[in-house]
Amino acid sequence: MGVPTEGEPIQIHSYKHNGHIHRIWDETTVLKGTQNLVIGGNDRTVVTESDGRTWVTREPAICYFHSQHWFNVIGMLREDGIYYYCNLSSPFIFDGEAVKYIDYDLDIKVFPDMTFHLLDEDEYERHRQIMNYPSAIDQILKANVNQLICWIRQKKGPFAPDFIDTWYERYLTYRHG
Image (cartoon, rainbow, N blue to C red; front, side, top):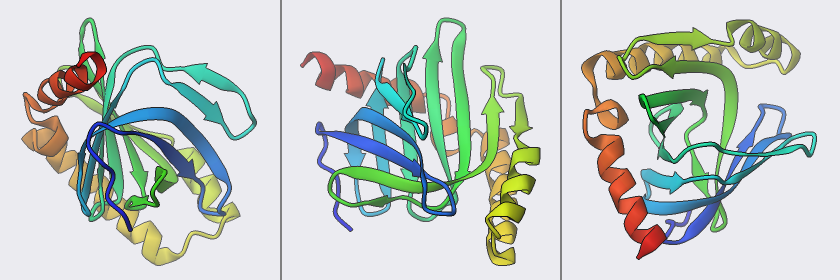
């Protein structure tokens, strides 16, 4: 597994458990890249859905991927504060062109006041049966939901008070530097 180069644009590829592509983010600037961690920034990037439809993100976002955790976190900078969208997913890999992971349906949306909602439990249950998620993966994902909730409550990792703002400042230096 390679390491993405800081300042370079990469894509983000989200897959489903059955191997089908789910979503592609066209361009994200690497802000930090190691074997275990990728932090990226993007703004108004084109997103392509599995059916070919495209849309453009509305606000700047900082993306956090870790090779040891079964989730990734996107912090979106909006006028009324930072909103987080957390995907329960496989740990990422980087293959030289894109950060890739398997999206496992469950999501946690976190609001600027740090309240949160677990989303898509019905979709998870449906896909778990259709795609035959192994029970080990089901257990890992449920444990990672709990870990993610602890991180949110403790304001740890990407939820730390200055995390998104600090990385957004770095993103702006690449973007306008």
